[in-house]
Image 1: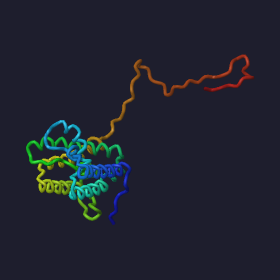
Image 2 (image 1 turned 135 degrees about the horizontal axis):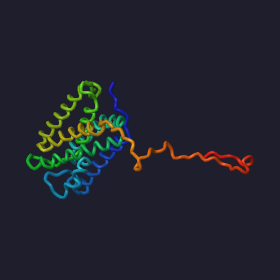
Image 3 (image 1 turned 90 degrees about the vertical axis):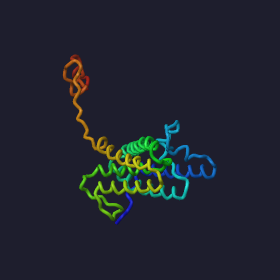
Image 4 (image 1 turned 90 degrees about the horizontal axis):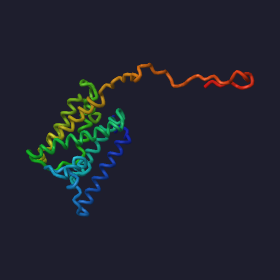
Length: 239
């Protein structure tokens, strides 16, 4: 029977932040007339705005009914994928994965938009695409992953399914530059898992002292209290 995984602290904070920033951006854009989405979305072309937009574009979405549906779908997939990842590898690695996948997608989108048809890049899709790549790289290649508790598939098949969906959606929207950007998010998740999370820890060698003498096992000395004159009257202390 399918059920959602327990909502971990970082994943919960991430979902709340994405929802709050999306709603705020839509209200400011449609009600107050402030172009927040244009300021925070990753626009095609390189300029001063690119310096902050490579970080902020997952926080906003298209201010339309389609953007609301896209946000809900992204939140569901983030809950399904990010919560188990955080439960297994910790909040620190989950945060690092979000940053890595966001920047990888942005760094590929910016040059691709110079040569391919492109629309502003918005939404948290690089986040769940990155965690899909990371989760697929964290299990054996012949493992069986359950898609919504119904369809068992291998990690490679799951990656190809999600990649195929995002390619089809981007082509349908005419955002051809987003196709390699989404693929970069998945690839960043795979590399992050293999080279950072699953990298074997190196054994630390003990440092040699500067004078060449071996170090003591501890820093204490045994001092016997008392003296020879009143040895029977005064207590003895062992320090």
